[in-house]
Image 1 (cartoon, rainbow, N blue to C red):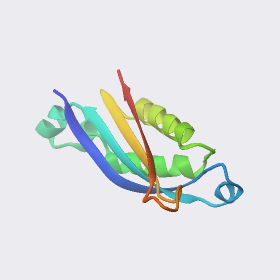
Image 2 (cartoon, rainbow, N blue to C red):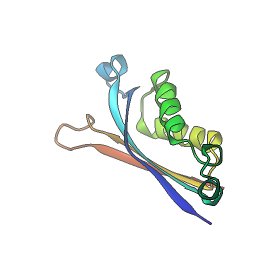
Image 3 (cartoon, one colour):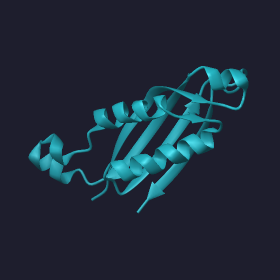
Length: 117
């Protein structure tokens, strides 16, 4: 069985960018995260121990990014995707990062990566 659990528009502050001002001040990033997993045991048991703890995902991701620095969203997202895939049990993972402050004339710049077993 394959189900999808989504975390939409998670707001996280991180230092990412190539410009000097970007290296000094954390910027808001938004993440859409999609986990492909089997939720049948969690549905049967109604027990968090059998589910993906999405609050833990959000808290730990925020902590990880608060302690990191990247120049490129490509490097940031590859790191985040590999870390999430290793930390949380799932069959596949898709994650998109949005950088609202990247281009003045655009709402945001985004990148999506996928990981799977």
